[in-house]
Amino acid sequence: MEASDYCIITTSTDSKENADAITQRLLEKKLVACVQSTTIQSAYHWERKIIESEEIRLQMKTKRSLFENIQTEIEHLHTYDVPEIIMVPMAGANPPYLQWIEEETIST
Image 1 (cartoon, rainbow, N blue to C red):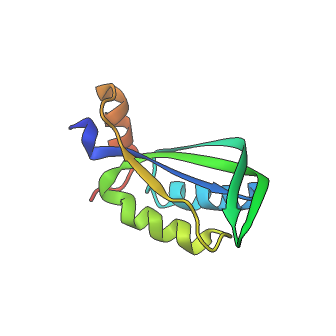
Image 2: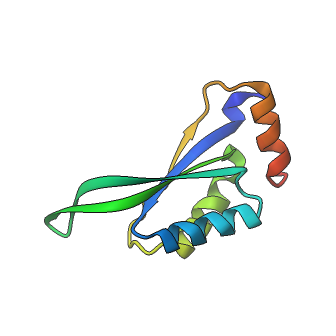
């Protein structure tokens, strides 16, 4: 079990309802072991305007091999035309935590 086999996936959305729907679907399908949510302030370019809004960031712990499945689920449920879906491989992590992720997600 190598830390590089695991990752953190991040997305952000505009409502608690959408964040909850994404969280529940990914947990129910055992695509992720954990989802943490945080309210953030965002500023970005969209349709030739600068937008400032409150969003909810979801940070998910999972296996890299599940990324495409997770991406598909997020794209299906997300309210944005262009959702942020970023995967960052883990460079290191404590072995018991990696084992927990392994046990709580589907086999690939």
